[in-house]
Each structure stands twice: as C-alpha cells, then as structure tokens.
Length: 248
Ligand SMILES: Nc1ncnc2c1ncn2[C@@H]1O[C@H](COP(=O)(O)OP(=O)(O)OP(=O)(O)O)[C@@H](O)[C@H]1O
Image 1 (cartoon, rainbow, N blue to C red):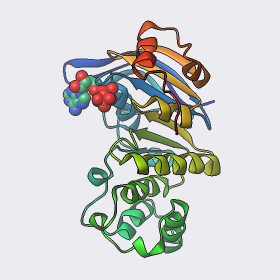
Image 2: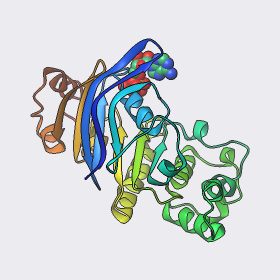
Image 3: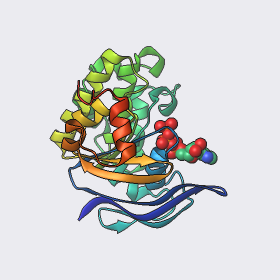
Image 4: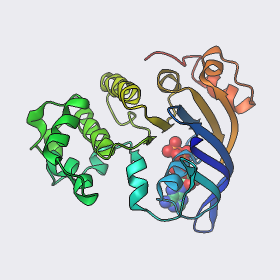
C-alpha cells in the first residue's frame, strides 16, 4: 500500500486549472520530491492533498484511503504539512507551549506537558524555549517549532513545502539534518517541494519533475546525481544547477 497516491489529478483555482493529470505513488517510509519551475504546480499538489486546494478531480488516496475534499480531523493524525515560512505558520501571540499543546487538546490527547517537553528535545530545542513567543526565536528555531507542531500527533506523512528556503544557508543544513534524523527515527514518509536539487539529493529517494502543471518525469535520485534524467526539461533543470545536485 502506498502512503500517498495520486491518479489523474487535475487541480484548479476557480476557473483556472493549474495541475493536469498528475499521477504519483509514494511508498510508506519513502521520501519523494517535487521539483520544477516556479508556478509549475508543486505547492498546489501539496495543498490539494492537505485539503487546502479543494477544487480537484481524479483520485487522491492516503494510506489507501480515498481523500475527501474537506479538512478532516482524522486526516490530521496521519498527515501534516510544514510550510516555507515558519513566521507565517505559527501564531505570533501564542507561546511555543500553547502552539505545541493545541493539536493535542483538539484531539483529546493527554500527557500534554510531557509530550511538549519530549518534542522540544526531539527537535533540538532547549526546554527554556517552551514559554517563549515566536519573535523571541531565530528563524531556524521557529522552523524547529513548526516541525515539532506537525509531529505532535505522531503522523505518518509530512508534506514539506520548501521547508528550508526561507532560512539562512548555514541554518538550512541544520534543519535538513533534523528532518533526515526525524524521518529515520519515526519512519516518516515525506513529500517535499523544493527548487533546490542538493536538498533532493540529501533528503529524497525519488523525485518528480514538474513543468507547467504536468509531471514530466519520475526517477530515482541516483539519476539526478548521475545527471541521467531523460526529459529535456529535467535535463535543463540539471544543467541550470551546473551539475551541483549534491552539497549538503
Ligand atoms: N490561491 C491561488 N489562487 C489562484 N491561483 C493560484 C493560487 N495559488 C497558486 N496559484 C497559481 O497556480 C499555479 C501553480 O502555483 P504553485 O504555487 O502550485 O506553483 P509552485 O510550483 O509551487 O511554484 P513556486 O516554486 O513558485 O512555489 C501558478 O500559476 C500560481 O500563480
């Protein structure tokens, strides 16, 4: 059974269709990247899976279960999304403790205090951050909080939308290492959007290359590293990176 599968998925915003006939399957425990030019529909695919872009047709299944069009509570326990900009995605006036406790409260999970402390440790944040506010944290620390919040309900799948691109280069590597470690420790499945090919090489097993709303190639990351992707656009992307597909 796939963790995520899309079959012939079209996605629109109002009258404008932006994704055409997307199909992919991500195995349980796999890390899968969506790459491609800006505006090609990568984030839209994540949003449709997460229930944030409801105007789609085709089939989306999560752990074998067809995905409905609405935000639903059970889904949140299985699949969570992490956004590019942690400042926009964590509430500025809530303490880190409140942010991390909230999903537990909504889902009636107990032992909140212990769970929040354990999660802070798991994402490499000192306990003293617990009662601070987001503006008292660095960008990297805030992204650790956003990742912690996504993991509070022990989901199986993370949808990661450019999780490091808003961060300083020096901090990006720390967050990538964290994601890699958490994935191994918690046997997570990743579907990750990025325009950064070294991130794909570092964190992913396979990738789909998107162009103008279509997936033009799906391949193992070995093909990316070897420069042997076959679609002309995928090759263009590789050439534009100067062959620098590794480096983290
Ligand atoms: N809320 C929205 N309403 C209308 N159109 C949108 C909306 N969000 C995105 N689009 C359009 O949908 C298309 C796909 O956007 P999307 O954000 O999925 O691309 P992307 O591949 O993730 O790009 P980027 O790498 O720049 O984030 C673009 O043409 C974009 O302008």
